Amino acid sequence: MAELAGLEDPKARAVNERHGDDHGVNLGALRALAKRLRTQQDLACRLWETEDSAARLLALLICRPKAFGRDELDVMVCEARTPKVHDWFVNYVVKKNPHAEEVRAAWSADPDPVVASAGWALTADRVTKEPGGLDLEGLLDVIEAEMKDAPERLQWAMNTCLARIGIEHAALRTRAIGIGERLEVLKDYPTPAGCTSPYAPVWIGETVRRQQAG
Image 1 (tube, rainbow, N blue to C red):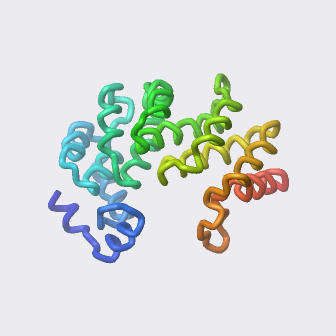
Image 2 (cartoon, rainbow, N blue to C red):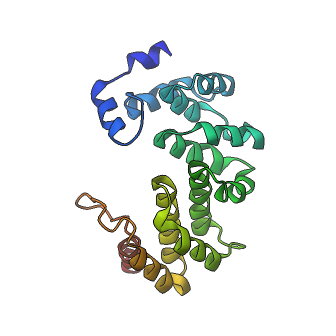
């Protein structure tokens, strides 16, 4: 914890706070520390228990993702409230855990929008990598009905799922684009030059175009 405190950078904290995070550690420095520590599950658990965001990010880098039980994942997803901790928890731990599909289904319907956003992020990943067994039409029905008024983080995850369906499944592409055009979610999101807009119709169109050109 003392070493983490020594990595605190006021400029990094200011940038992170604009994105809803509450840590001031440069992520490159954090990854270097994790590389030195290597995998240490017990230390990772102790770091997580501190409730400090920088410590939790380090914990997610040095833990053994497959070591967490279902109940532990349920507790951790409720505790992972800041965007970066939430994102790393889903991508670095849950996706590699044997309970990933089980929690995906449960979390997607959770009344807590932060928990639900984790479920939808897992669903978007499965749409791309392992869509068999998913009711894609049903997912589009839910997105069409609920995404417009969903809280920001849940809305973002549902929008990602919408784009992934449109990109990966040609038969549903027209419908996915149409939903995006009607709801206009993230249509005016500021996008840096050279980056793809998160607005689903543009995201789908540009990604498919690149895939076909490549």
